[in-house]
Image (cartoon, rainbow over all chains, first blue to last red; front, side, top):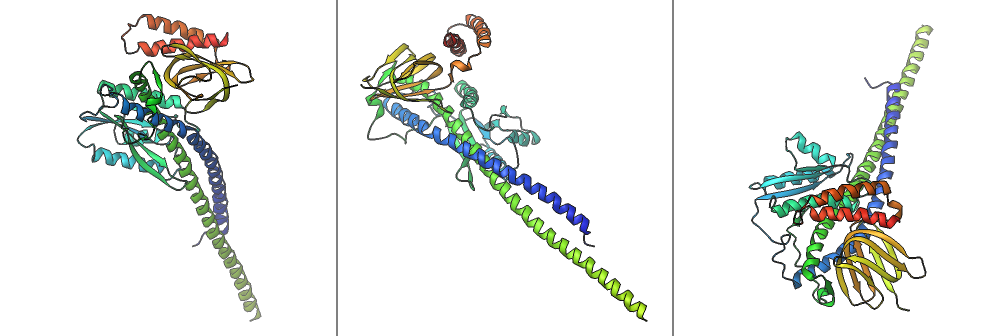
Length: 291
Length: 133
């Protein structure tokens, strides 16, 4: 039997409340997304500038002795996995985790993989599968990303890389393409690959005097650059998270609307059925009394 | 009168942008000052106080914890890892940390991997005191 009118009414009420919540969450995500995008926009030019400067320094110095640039035989790999702290953002986290699993099983299947997890989600995921991460950070991706956090995380990673504990470092994260699309990206952080970004016409390094000298400046700038790469990935991921949540909540709001529509229809039908039944009862009883 | 265009940022925010008469900064080889017409030059920064004399405004100081400094054609570009302004200073905490890191530093040898890190931390908190005074 179909649900009674009262049941349907109650159901509609509850869905309406849910819809209000999802609507509010969508608004919040939209506001946060705007903030995250602004942060990305202010940061980009400086990163580009530093990148150019480093590229030109690398091409004009003998950097063989710089460990951050040197390739080694790869035995162990550090994977930095960036997910969100909170859920309700569609397949956002799942995509990153799937890609991580894929990397571990294919590209790095012969190698020792250490996981450095950022975000509560990835930790829960790997804990459930009995994988113990090397490092785990939470609450670093909140309303905004602090560079100092990226810097601290990277300090440890760089130290391990220089010790020889890891031979390559990758970061897996969601790149923010637009509000509807976040693309899972795998980026190599260490050893640093530059090379193809050298501005050919004006070699910046020629123009400047360096203090104390080019090598020292380069040595100081490279770790900074890697930190900025991670910071950039974190910013992208944060923007992506808000965008994914916004889309997910938008879909949820639409679905709730759809459900309410169907339930209202059902409610009307139930009401009409009751009315008809009552009418039939009355007319039959009148007919019965006539006889 | 010639002037410098300064843009001073940390990766997460803009600290200062504008026309400046004079700027001095803690270079890796010692403090240096830059006036308009300076040769193109680039250096890394230590921990210390950055002095800025904006055009037509009061001079101000800011504590900078490591960074990168570049002058090119009267355009100055500073990236700091971290900055501390006078309002941010917590004197009591700074004093305590100075004691702590001084002790730690004296127990480390020059070639210890942590020596540089601790030295920077100590300098950061000493800089805070100087900034507040």
